[in-house]
Amino acid sequence: MARVEVLRIAIAIFFIAAATIAGAFAFQASGYIPCELCLKERIPYYAGMGLALIAILLAIRGPRALLPACFGILFLVFAAGTALGVYHSGIEWGFWPGPADCTGSMSKASSMQEFLHQLNTIKVVRCDAAAIRILGLSLAGWNAVISVVLAGLAAFGIARSRNL
Image (cartoon, rainbow, N blue to C red; front, side, top):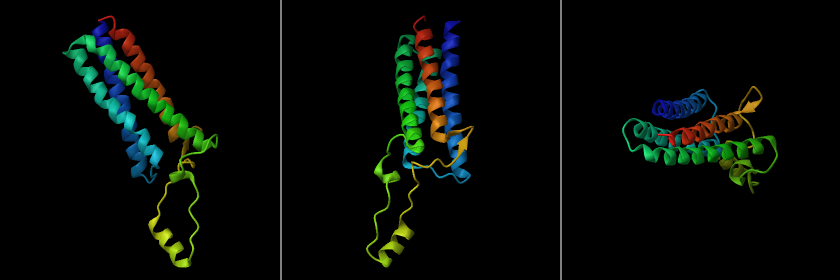
């Protein structure tokens, strides 16, 4: 029974991560262009989906002794995702400064021609301005919440996979 439970945990992690990335792409397709930090916040989901697939395979056929380690890595990946989401949310709320490449002001142009060139070439999506808030949280805030849930599932997976 514990094997089935561990398999369900790994499947849940995979599908929640995949749904989160699908949601991010849906917002992007509807016109909400991601900033640099938003794109970096997707990396734990990509890695997590791959690791969750490995956990699924290990739960089905592989050496089950590797499952706690796999869930441990999943926990660390989504803990990092949580940290990124909290960091980005803090930037949006003005709690701390963000990276200069997406929150700093543009350099002053020395001439009208340079100013016009900057207008045509520089397309910065600001990291310190939430594009949308849903139930009071920005997408970065929701990323932190979802990452905490996934890290919790991975921790539960560690505990349950040790009993196999």
